[in-house]
Image 1: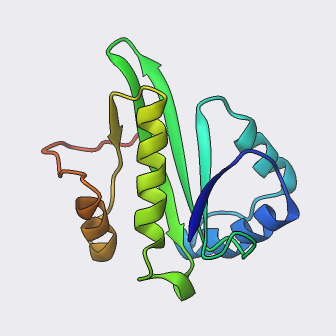
Image 2: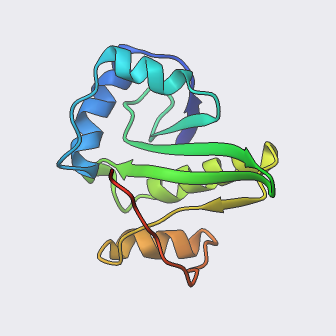
Length: 143
């Protein structure tokens, strides 16, 4: 098993996103090569990929957004997805742990994420990885 931080566009990455993103969201539009390049070019946004073998296919991904606000550097985990065929083999934990280690190395004071209560396996995973449920409300403005 290995987790790497992806910094460059490749056909392999585009193929993996085409396969994995529909498993994460049924409403997300397919990404173009230009979309992925723009995503990777963002300062403070980091993509982690999971493989069972160093030369094997990408079987999972996680996005980590980092930003600085007046109270310090923060990190936010988004879009964690593991291919259905690879679930239950430690991919999610490996991705979360790699992202948290990276966030701490670059000075993030906290790392946050959200997960719907119906995603029971994901919520168990996040607790196992050391995340604690916070008493908070999440609001969204969709304009």
